[in-house]
Amino acid sequence: MKKIELKEGERFDDLQRNGYEIIQNPGFLCFGMDAVLLSGFAGVKKGGDLMDLGTGSGILPILLSAKTEGRHFTGLEIQHECADMARRSIIHNGLEDKIDIVEGDIKEVAKIFDAASFDTVVSNPPYMIGGHGLVNPDTPKAIARHEIYCTLSDVTKAAAWLLKEGGALYLVHRPFRLVEIFEEMSSCKIEPKRMRFVYPYEDKEPSMVLIEGRKGGNRRITCERPLIIYGPDGKYTSEITETYGY
Image (cartoon, rainbow, N blue to C red; front, top):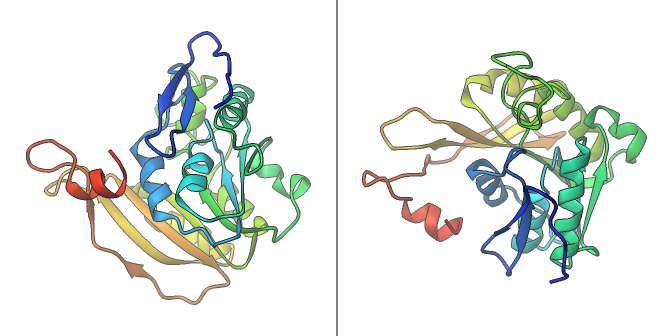
């Protein structure tokens, strides 16, 4: 690892993968279970190129570079402070040859990247509709959680531009927006192909949904068995501890 100086409020967090650490600042939105689960759900083509839309701290490119045999990973992030933390995490872990962090707007991907230049796109986008329950829409956490700088439609349109024909889009989102997610993906000719609901406990409603879509794919979807996070004892289930490293 290369020595990186932390800025005020920052810390190193151990990713439990390849000895990697990531720089995070609690003043911004730190990564959570949703990003970790998406990194396990997403399939990255061997030798392929991946884009993470709204990369935040760079958690998905770092984890996927460790878990898959992809050739190159790119993270796009609009918030300067987050992009800076992600870049320094890449340097800290010696991943400069495998991962690039680009500061820019998802809505401007056509001006930044060539069409059909990625095999895989992943995104852990803002879940809440912009303005819903916000106190201060300019805070970094609000930007990460609410559709202030980008909407679900912006994400799917960007993915459609970036993906090669047959390429895959992987999302983690909230089940209450599932109909809208399917509509937006289909309108961009990205057909939902696979999904998995994530339940906090077996007897609760699902809190997340993992979705795979294929650009130019046929209309056929597979629903995988539920993923349960916590057992009756309140501890992580064996699948979470064994598959995802928690």
